[in-house]
Amino acid sequence: CLVVTHNHGAYIDRCLNALVPEITRINGELIVIDNRSDDESAAIARSYPQVNLHINKQRRGFAANNNFGMAIAKGHYILILNPDTEVLPHALETLINFMNTHPKVGLCGAQLLFPDGAIQPSARRFPSITSVIARRTPLRGLLRNSHFNQHHLMLDVDHSQPREVDWLLGACLFIRREILAEVGPLDEGFFLYVEDIDWARRIHQALWQVYYVPSSQIIHHHLAVSDKKFFSRYMWIHFWSMVRYTRKHLLPAIPWLAIDRPQVDVWNLTSKLNCQLATAKSIQPQYFWQRHNRFSPKINHDQ
Image 1: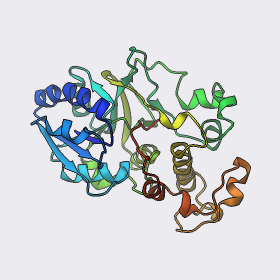
Image 2: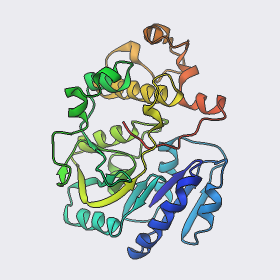
Image 3: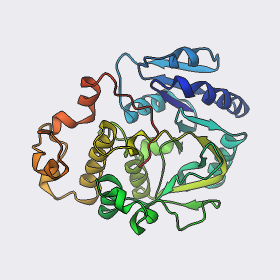
Image 4: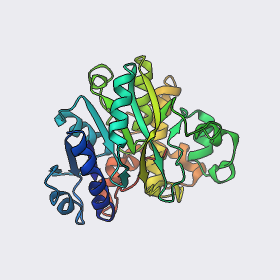
C-alpha cells in the first residue's frame, strides 16, 4: 500500500491507525512517502514500526510520488491510497479476493464513503468536452445539477452494486502489477489531478477492465479544496490538467492545444476568464509549487 502525505498531520494518524491492522491481516507492506511536509506528518508515520517511510528531498507531484512508490513496492497488487482515508475492516482482503477471481480486471477501487456514511460518487464516466465545461469553468455553478454533470458522476446508476466503470477516483486505486509493464505508470506530465483518468483510459485501451467494488469500503474525508473557487491555484492546476487530458485524448490534432511545449502564449485562451497569466510556463503546476510557499496538495483527486 502506498500513501503520499504532504502536511496531512491532521489525517495521517487516523489513516495509519486503520490501515496497519488491515496490512498485517494480508501480510502486506506499507510505504509512506512524505512530500517534504512542514508539519508532523513524517514524525507520525515514523512512529508506526510497520511503515517504510521515505522523505522527499524535493517536492514532487502526485504521479511522480506514486510512481516512485510503485517502483519500490514488492507486492503482486499495489494500492494507492489517499492520506485522508480510513480503511474499514476487510476492505483490502475484499479487493484482493475480487482481483484473484476476475483476471481480466487490471484496476479496481473500493466504495468511498463520506464521514457521515453517505456514498461518495467515486466511480465515474470519462469526461467529455461538455462535462469539462460543466465542471471546470466559471459556468460550473450554473451547470452543477445539469445532465452532463450527473452523467459524469454516474448518479443514474446504483452505487451499491459492483460494475465495470470508465475510471475511479485516485483516492483509492488497487492495481495489478502487470499493468505497470503493459500500460506504464502514471503520467507525470499531470503534476496534480487527472492522472487517474488518464491511467484508466490507457488501461481500457490495453483491453483491461476497470471495476468498482462497493463491498470494499473506505471512509474518505474528501477535502476537495479544488472545488471551492475557480480562480484558485488548485482550481487552475485542475483546469490545466484537464486541458492537457483533452489535448492528449480528445483533441490530439489541434495545434493550439500543444501544451507539452515549454512556452505557450495562453493569454487569448484565458482572457475571457480574466486570468492575468501570460505564458504556460508561469501557470504550469511545477512552477506554482516553486513560487508559492503555501502550495500544498493535501487534497483528494476529485475530478
